[in-house]
Amino acid sequence: MLKLTETFACKAPHPATGTRKYWDSEIKGLGLFIGKKAKTWYFQRDVGGQTRRALIGRYPVISAVAARQAAQSLALDMSRGVGKIPPNPDHMVRASATPTGVNAARAA
Image (tube, rainbow, N blue to C red; front, side, top):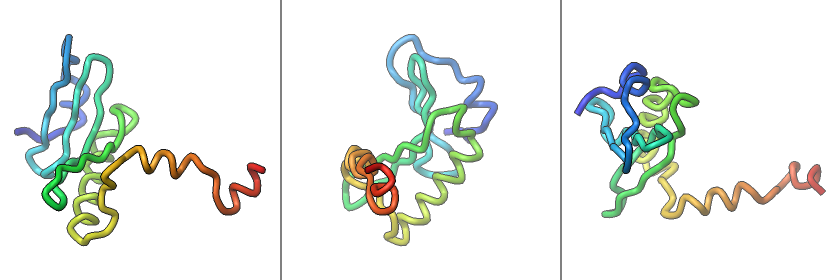
């Protein structure tokens, strides 16, 4: 394992096929997945016997420093039982797409 840095993320080549997964040596669960066209940061942790993976964001929109901070925050929250990764990430997308509260009144 290696430390996932800005230099590594920038210089790591895209594979011709498939996805390469690189894991950080300092922050357990921080990963950089490199596909044919994109480089994406993830945080992964076992919760209740099941592996949960949270999308942090795409590189270079999310820098290595920002990804590391997000991973540390997720790890801390999960260790406290706060902000656990939901079992279905699509659930969050559907819920946030529905206007509620003050914004719903503006949308109407």
